[in-house]
Length: 320
Image 1 (cartoon, one colour):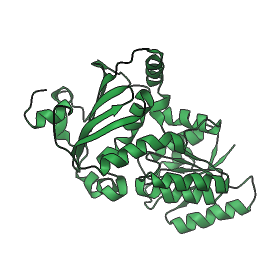
Image 2 (cartoon, rainbow, N blue to C red):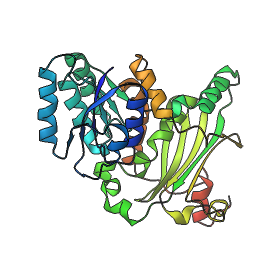
Image 3 (cartoon, one colour):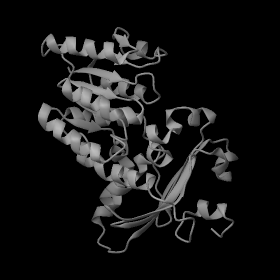
Image 4 (cartoon, rainbow, N blue to C red):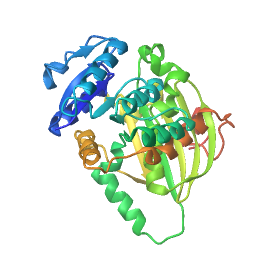
């Protein structure tokens, strides 16, 4: 049984980590969040010490470390806002613990190099949650793609629209410096998936970059990708709005829909199982998508053109 601590336990994604810690038979020994609405802890670890101040959390973690191997924290699960990931990973490593961090691991690629050095210095590891890589339907798709002998590049279209209210832009998620913007905050999952499926980035072109939506064109080793991401419910297609859906997610490969709408419930637990077995996703796995998201965030949009996603072209009144 391993000892875990968690930061950002009051956030949306934290419950999946709590469930994964519990389902893998491990123990939560400390939890942190600046907000105190964390009643969900009673469902998983009702007796865990909880802190709203990092300084007191840090002091308690250090106290456990000095009490010997049986009490020291082995892993820190990091569910805090994106801009805090780097600092909390460093905290875990200095503590002698490994980090299991939500995406994106960091916002800036050069921070990964420093973390690699700290891994060597402290003898601990940095892991991340790339849960789409363990989704069975996507694993099977990758196996199928790798068996193909054709040199032809696939035509891929990524569309992800997830409605968010005014709260989103008022929170850290709407702050470019804290979240990395829409392309990073909600796109990093899909950019990692596409690179994992179709190979490294050969060309990257941004066509639109706004606070609530972004789109562009990426050429990968084995695919040409048109992508569009949005948190604006006005962008939802009629097929979604007529059925009352607030989210629309679609990935097509050569015009064929990739079906992976089911099977998400236990993916964090699967990633935890692999990580605890020594097969987790590390810094090198996370790097390509972080580099791509950073490039998109810092690139000047060239405007909507023939290579743009159909949703973008329709905004200009162009033919789809």
